[in-house]
Length: 205
Ligand SMILES: [Zn+2]
Image 1: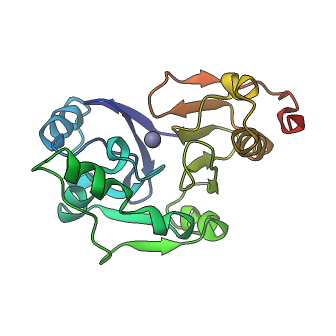
Image 2 (image 1 turned 60 degrees about the vertical axis):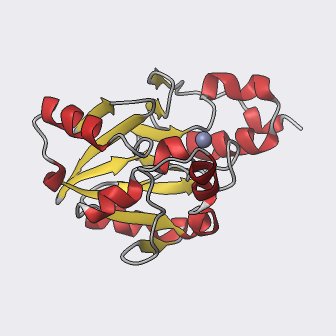
C-alpha cells in the first residue's frame, strides 16, 4: 500500500496509490483548496494525479471541498448508502455564510452500492472493499484494504468502541475487524495498530 497522509486544515485526507493515479479518502472544509495544494506540493503530487475521491461521510469537514475537487477533474465516488446524505452539509454552510462552499452536484458522480465496491477497487488495482459503517452518522463508510488498513472517518476508534456502549458503533467495528485490517486510519485521531485477536464487541446490548 502506497499511502500519503495529508493534514492541511482540520481533517486527515488519505491518498492511496491506484493503478490510475491517487484515490483520496476524505477532503477538508470548503475554502481549504489553497492549503490542499500546498500539502500536495510537499508530497510532490499534483492535483492532476488525484483521480478519485471517496468520502467517509458528508459532514462539512470531510466533504466541504468535494465539488471544488470535482471541478478540478477528480472523480467523486458515492456509495448508494450515502446518496441521501450528500446535501447534509448544505444547510450547515448556508448558516455559516460560507462563500467558499459549493454544494455537490449530482452530475458526474459514480454511484454504486457497497456490495459492488470490491470490483470497483479491483479495477483500480486495489484489493479491498468499502463497508457501510454507521455509528457516527448514518452515511458513514469505511475503506478497507485487505489485511492492511481501514480508513474509518469519524467512526470512533476501535479502542473507544467498547466503552461507548453504542450498538451501531460496535456492529460497525465487528464488521471491520472481520476483515482483519492491521492499521486504523481515522479522520481526526492518530493512526493506530489494531489487535489481531479482537475483543468480542458485538455482545454489548
Ligand atoms: Zn462527522
